[in-house]
Length: 265
Ligand SMILES: [Fe+2]
Image (cartoon, rainbow, N blue to C red; front, side, top):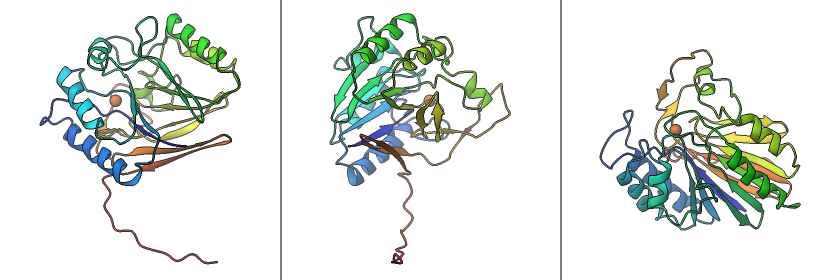
């Protein structure tokens, strides 16, 4: 089963520039590449920071651009989003019983849990008791199915001090305690960090990737500010099988010609 992850699209009303780049045009280039090379993917998941400032017009642009995909798409929200405005403009996206943007998707490879880690008007993430109860219930009902988690903030430090200050803070231990009670969680996919990262956390493999607009510099020393960069954007092509998860990164602006090399057999 092939799926696509896009993250941190940071749309602002069309025509405006954000950190020296045009978010709408870059997202359109991303969608064009997915259509050309990965139209057979089953779905696309967008892991938050859909807009830069929660502007309604930016959400409408987001919808218009994503609608060009040939497969279904499922957005979740990040710290730059506005939960209420998002929910108004995307009434088809399910909310949990408390109004958080959390949902479970049933697929042929198992269950996808899309979490809401947003702390209103704050860059750091949170995961409260109510959201945790929803997560526990989904996991208790998952039986032996493979489960894949999707969220915006990582619930752990990644070693970039300025990003670690705005990771999921309150509730990180709550998530860790919940997931440690289940052995069927196969992977955690997140956004927020605008960088490619992979590793494992309490035995759960994880990956993150570049955003579609600006990136964040690999700076393992500075604590009090982030530095944005223009490293090339990418999306992930994820192959899920019962016993294996493989994540590829596609730099969709790269038009350099391929050089064919015969295989030595
Ligand atoms: Fe972001």
